[in-house]
Image 1 (tube, rainbow, N blue to C red):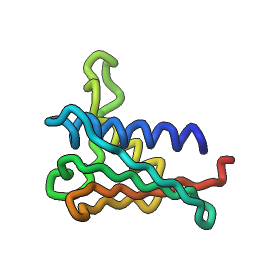
Image 2: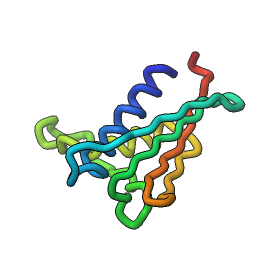
Image 3: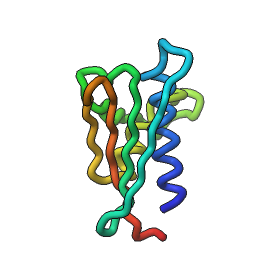
Length: 108
């Protein structure tokens, strides 16, 4: 579970840095964690740009049965996040991006 949490948090915060804060030199990312029934819940808040259409980007599907050098360098993050989390939700509240998700704690 810890490795899963690290991967999801790395992907989510990397997206904030690369996309939400793309036009600024600094910004704040606030992380909260909490335990709920069978899950570890996470909330990530930033004040950067909102997601396009105020929705989480869809998972991109790539043909992985191809030459390695023809695969794109990026674009896999939201697929990983969607596949490893439950209760994934995004809202824009008072100029802030709020991303919430849970990871099952059964892997501990």
